[in-house]
Image 1: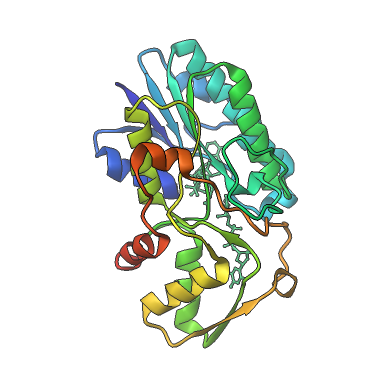
Image 2: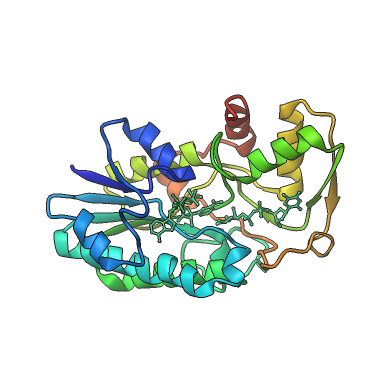
Length: 275
Ligand SMILES: NC(=O)C1=CN([C@@H]2O[C@H](COP(=O)(O)OP(=O)(O)OC[C@H]3O[C@@H](n4cnc5c(N)ncnc54)[C@H](OP(=O)(O)O)[C@@H]3O)[C@@H](O)[C@H]2O)C=CC1
Ligand SMILES: Cc1cn([C@H]2C[C@H](O)[C@@H](COP(=O)(O)OP(=O)(O)O[C@H]3O[C@@H](C)C(=O)[C@@H](O)[C@H]3O)O2)c(=O)[nH]c1=O
């Protein structure tokens, strides 16, 4: 199998480099630019049998004023990748988000739940998944949520860093989901790929929490005296609307691979290695 990893330097990309080993072939922006089809054709050449796409537009608030760019990368860029994969006979591994759902559910969203994104980032990712399915490319599409790692920009590093300089933090307690260690996601995706799984899957850490619960555990593990206070979304206004409830249902994944490790367990491992 010849694997091409797109964006080995992003948060998830680096987790794949670690999971696959240094021998992996990676290509980064701007050598590959999902808005420029000729750069896709240049790197996805015959002989590549598996493409792992870790590139994306991931600025949730920024997408509200840059929706065209978010759609170009997360929507039409993914379509171009998928069509090229079909031409060369490669399987495309691609990632989706919990932000494609409306957030009104009271039980975990199954893989087949209808898409109803609340913000521009979610809409761009929903476009990407629709175009991926329509492309006819062989694919493994993995929705995930609330990604964190010891590196890169993510909620864990943001809160751990704020807790060092602030005595108090306010964090929303009315948005619930499933945190996901990027390293766990990379390993679990490869396990699904190696079992020949295709189509749409959900992979997150086990358990669920609010952003407040998540922040409180980050601060506790960090050993800081910073006090985390719960607040409502209205008390912490942001440009993009986020789902109030975006727990992804893991039943199909767990039936193949067993129970996903609890988020507190994965978080403790990441906090011990925070860069
Ligand atoms: N982060 C999260 O909480 C979640 C992420 N996901 C999904 O997981 C996947 C990985 O996310 P994550 O690792 O956080 O992403 P990152 O933002 O860490 O990395 C994205 C990468 O894409 C690159 N990139 C940006 N624009 C382009 C472009 N036009 N063409 C090619 N590459 C480009 C970036 O390069 P540069 O840095 O140079 O701009 C960066 O290396 C994405 O599909 C994301 O939607 C899903 C749920 C949660
Ligand atoms: C830093 C901070 C955030 N918050 C809130 C804002 C927001 O509602 C929530 C999450 O904050 P962030 O902006 O860091 O996370 P956000 O960018 O919304 O994270 C999302 O990223 C994209 C890419 C995804 O696909 C999603 O799964 C999800 O991980 O926490 C606080 O209440 N207090 C704080 O001090």
